[in-house]
Image (cartoon, rainbow, N blue to C red; front, side, top):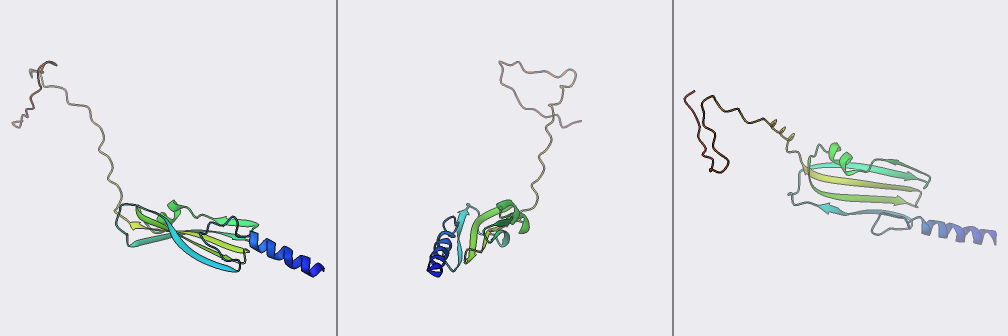
Length: 141
């Protein structure tokens, strides 16, 4: 009788292990599933980066499965799309990974510093606010 209760409790425990799963589908014994997260308007990039987190016995979870870490790991600064991969073995070991695809278009060019307009030269005429401004350039300097 005790073995029957233990078996029933074990089946219920194993069945509930997948209830908080991030997988679109899951298997009670084993699952390894891939799926989409998001896509952008950029064409599919040749670069690939991955970041993962894992859970052990449902007691300890470690890792960094963030998009920024995956992009950094792939040297990506323009993301084309993101996929995920989830794997579970008996609910005792679970792994979740993000896969980022994209391009490295180089560092962004620094913005030019804002400069104040040059002061008018002595003797230059300054248009009145009511008159339309004429654009002229003195190239004889």
